[in-house]
Image (cartoon, rainbow, N blue to C red; front, side, top):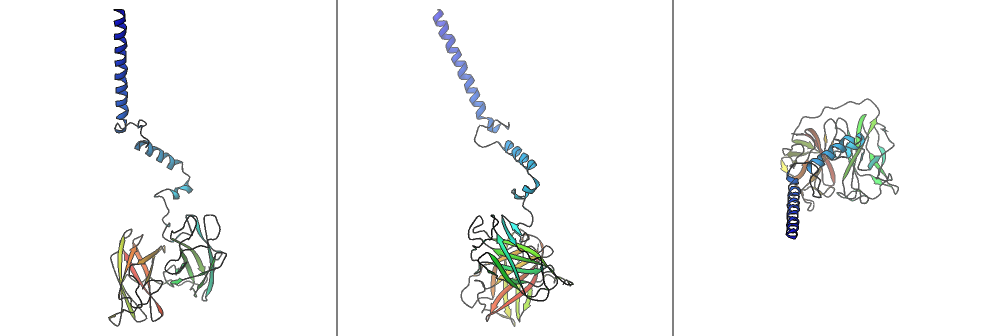
Length: 314
């Protein structure tokens, strides 16, 4: 009798233990849907824990580190208005340029290690594209500097008029941390003398240069990819003898009124001999709304033509 009682007690205890374990497992299994923080047994932190950690990290991050956090980049990042980005810097000791005469402007691109970069990928037949434009969007120059063995670039600037100018370097490193990534960096220089600012021409889809008429059509919106179509005519007739220029039939660059933000509009028309035109397509992305001064360069008969017009971006 005593033996049967002890056996029965052990059976009841085992059953109770099994029931308790079953309830505990069921509770753990339901934690991910319960909304209780700190009870998720999976390898991924709960949403509330992640949010709390994120908020804590943001609150404790130094102000200088905020620009490197996702979604916190300065407005100038990527629009050509910064002298440095991702460890790469456009360095130059020249802060002023004399007025009214050609000048050799020298600069270097330094990498994350602080040393001059000497390896650059070829983009549209060149390792470096250089642009100059005055603050009122006049005097546009698109040049291709030469690099010395020590990484110093020299660009032959044509005579600049008095005022503030922004100089842009567009390049792609061929090695290092930024290999394969396109950069546009810029610096400003002062040109001595009294600056006479020119008003920006009104928005218009048509411009004339050297007897050619260039028409640009499209409805670009800020922050969205759009296609622009440029058509070249002369004396009312379509032009079909455009020659390749930088491995394309036309090169299109734009600058935003006011801050001079940079936009390089990529050509979509394939090059096939010396008979390009009359219509050319471009992939366009403008970061900001407002007026943009657009410079379209094309070549005929060995001569380069630069048409300029004001385009409004909604």
